Amino acid sequence: MSAKGHVAQKAPIAVDVEADRSYWWCTCGQSQRQPFCDGSHKGSAFVPQEYKAEASRTLYFCACKQTDKAPLCDGTHNKI
Ligand code: FES
Ligand code: FES
Image 1 (cartoon, helix red, strand yellow):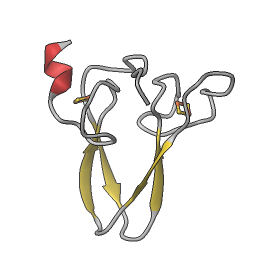
Image 2 (spheres, rainbow, N blue to C red):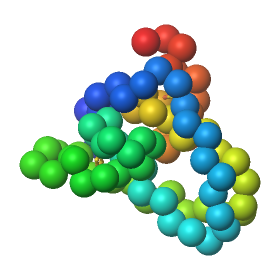
Image 3 (spheres, rainbow, N blue to C red):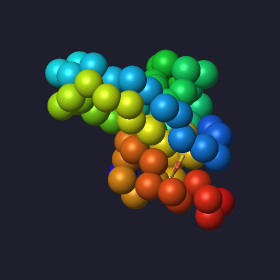
Image 4 (cartoon, rainbow, N blue to C red):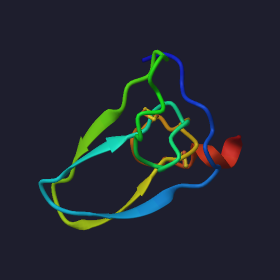
């Protein structure tokens, strides 16, 4: 995907993921359930991005949607 999504917020969201579970990261930035998809992308060119957790741990998901390491925060939110 070339275009990035709407900035939902300029800070990541910590999520305790569970091993072997799939999570659907919101790429469009319109979801009301950040950082994950709630279906609000419908009608746009955006689709959610799957993240399969390899281990149970705390991860920081990007909520600004401008990261280059999607779905995780890479610090880009500090530059917007
Ligand atoms: Fe943003 Fe689904 S609501 S990708
Ligand atoms: Fe998007 Fe940090 S929240 S890069």
